[in-house]
View 1 (cartoon, rainbow, N blue to C red):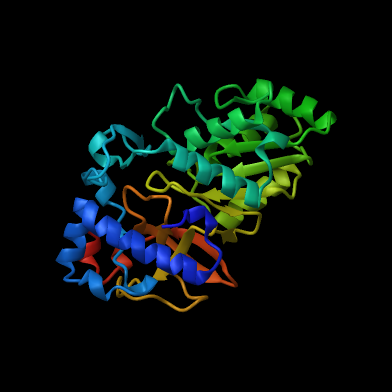
View 2 (cartoon, rainbow, N blue to C red):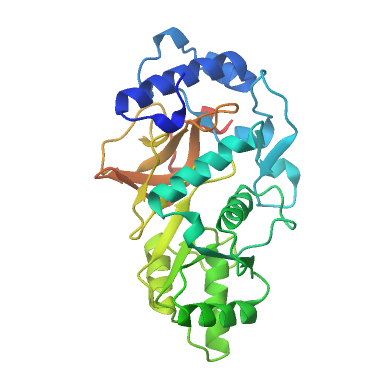
Length: 328
């Protein structure tokens, strides 16, 4: 089986998906039970649409890991303080995750060595099981710039650093969850400071966590663009249960690397798919999830147009009909 990072065509991708499906059916117990429960014969799975997608909730209830590997290393979602309500994604190979990070970031953003990375995020020691923090920490190590750092609790220091780096015309990427970026804007307003940094690239990663008024992605991007004075408002789409990232370079239009794909399932029938331009729930294929599950049915709403996908919000379960299996 060739490396997932060498996929060159749709047929390459399909073949890799089918081979991965059979591997995970044979070696990932929870996935095998799910496929069997659906009464799907693996021998008749030929196309992407034939593959069963595991409900993402399963990562909260089960250790989803190939029987061929052993690992106690995991990423864990944030969410509530109760462990039972948090997803855990077990990893046997951090090198695979790092290669996925490096190749997709380079493809969509650029060489990490060219950037200073600043984070409106907790640091790695505070949250060692966060896949997002691991990713940012890895990019900081690749960058190896003395200015790299986390500033979630120190807006004043971040402001002074941004002001200096902007004058020096340095290439800066500010990673931040949505509420933290908005908190920094509020800090600037409260202290009558300009938040205009035209050379800054912002990479927002979603997440209000109840800290701010909920808003659409487009509303958020417009606020960030106006308040920071930069056109470079990018977004990263991933989650604890994935080892790959999709990127938007503006306008809430995401692209996937060659080893990742989005399908939009029908809310009325979770085992069928809608046409391009129609909204539905997001299914994700992530071939970097070699030793867990590469086929995940998420709770996000989205649509695909012109080869790109949009994230529209979260599934309202009152609107879902006929998919009790997916949330059981």
